[in-house]
Length: 212
Image 1 (cartoon, rainbow, N blue to C red):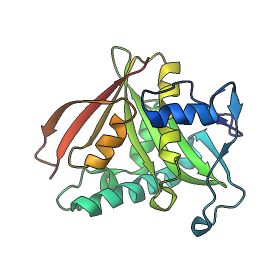
Image 2 (cartoon, rainbow, N blue to C red):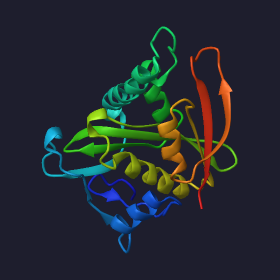
Image 3 (tube, rainbow, N blue to C red):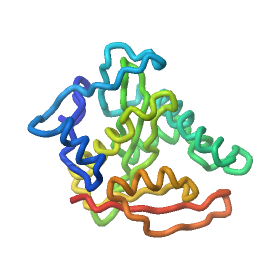
Image 4 (tube, rainbow, N blue to C red):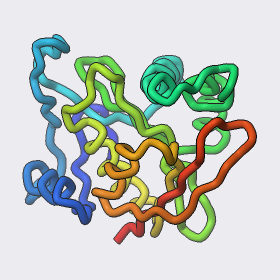
């Protein structure tokens, strides 16, 4: 299966970016499943270099909420979002009740990136009409960034979506976050529109990727 909890599934979506192709070349070629190895960083005190991508269950909900909120708080701090001016922003609006509803009632696929038993990254997929899906809340804890974890989660989401029969993936981002926008574009996402909402102090940007 995709998430036996012992090994990290290797995405079979090569991607259109140099990063995606390099990742495929390093980790995917000629292999079915293999253990993911995180880069060792003494500052992070990662021991054993062992990591995995695993499906989320009800026992993981609280930890996932904490990871999402802490991860998105860095975006809030960078762009000046607060619970007063952006109460619906992910860093402030994510709750155990909401995630539990998405998992148990909406049946969203949810996955966590785990290092030595600790959840450090997360994403979910909302299935849509016309064989499309929306990538939600892909995030990595600040202290675990710049080690390729976000890329592994993104490529895993491509694999998951394709396995569910999706032909297109949609995402919404903070349009002002140009670094994130460029990161998604490097994997083939195309920017399609922007939209302003009264309840957000930022512009919402929308991107899509054809899963081929």
